[in-house]
Length: 384
Ligand SMILES: Cc1ncc(COP(=O)(O)O)c(C=O)c1O
Image (cartoon, rainbow, N blue to C red; front, side, top):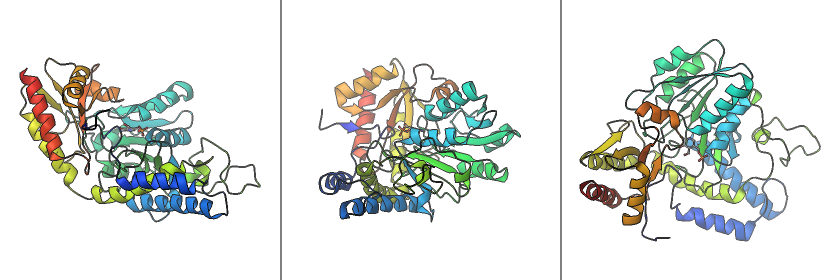
């Protein structure tokens, strides 16, 4: 593996993690090494304390005062599956968008095929934005879920989540926000978004390790949201009924404590970044440089303002996979190419079936020098 790699695939997972993430995971594994919430000895209680702290910090990030509303999962996909499978009943109608990731599209498709659930896919405009009016117009009497992504992992477009949340709340329809590309990148207030379910990985913007994710359960929804797994929770162990209290209802089996300990450290760094403008500035420098390259087509919002640091493009004469491979082999620049698990998004952009090349940046890892290097590399390739 190359040490001098320029890693620009942060939308897949952030890397490197803050030093404290590695250090605390190592300390936990070597010195604590106990399960959390299931023992009265010092190490088990230390595990429980660290899990509680991480839960509270993530709740704080969302402006939520009840930490138990944060449920730990394995990744963003796991969180979205819990929300979708836990809420939908046969015959329900769902409003979603063409911008979604397969982690939303495929669970919905499953319900379409097996449970007679109907799904409306709301279109986006040429820049990748969804209109709240289109969401409102798609709602039917039987609509039981509105599910949209907050920021696109293809175009970087930030969707009008607040307005969509208001539309759903006014109609008392549960609202699921896929915050995979926004949590840790943007300030997110559950209250301002009208209390959606918020699904997010821990390993992207929150800077935690792979194998971590969260689902925020808004007040009242726990009575409607079924648990997908049942088992040991370390609480009410004399009963064979799954507890109904949060977070135990949705957290069966031992937690990924080493991962959550690392996530806790990541969140403490991410909280500062989410409120800064640095990602926007990096994105602006990248967009401005890419726009000057002959034969390069940019997709998504023209401005850096309503975008996270995710930029998709194609270069005339190159397949996306070929260009990504060339950037890696000749320049040690690591980007992603293809459909990025969002097939309907590419149908809308006109980039099916090959997709796009995607650069994604992260504050604290990506430098302006990295941006200049990738722009220079693409300029050289375009001129070759
Ligand atoms: C928009 C979006 N949703 C969901 C996911 C799934 O997250 P995870 O990889 O943690 O399962 C991703 C991951 O790339 C994503 O970009």
